[in-house]
Length: 159
Image (cartoon, rainbow, N blue to C red; front, side):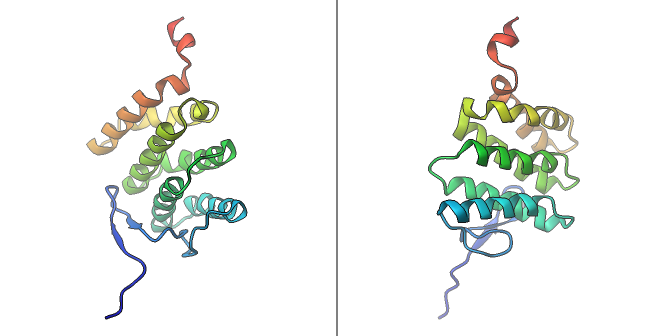
C-alpha cells in the first residue's frame, strides 16, 4: 500500500490545511534562516495573489510557518502583518478567517513585542466587528479584546 507523505484536513476557515509543512507553491518549509526568509517572502507574495485559493493557502501556510518556529523575529512579525492586513479586507470569508486566526496567533506568541506592528491591523480588525458572518464577527471581537492593549497602550487608554 502506498502512503502519501502529505495529508490534509479542512481547516476551520474552510481552506485546505496542509499538514506537511509546505509553502503554497509546494516546497517543504525548512527551519534554516535563509530558507525561512525565502519561505516567508513566498508566503507574503502568495497572500497577495489574485487567486482566492492561493491567498487562502498562503494564510494557512503562514499560520503553520509560525507554529514551526520556536521564536519569531520582529522582522518576521512585520512581514506577516504585511500579509495579514490585506487579507483582513479580503472578499473571501475563508481568507479573512485565516487572517484573523493568524493575527490571534501572533498576539498570543509575541504579546507586547507585536505592539509596534499591531496598530496597522487595528482598523481592519475593527471593520470586521460589523461583518455579516457571525463567525468572523466573533473572532474579530476576540482579537480586538486580546490586541487592544497592543494597539492602544494602557497608559494612553486611561488618559
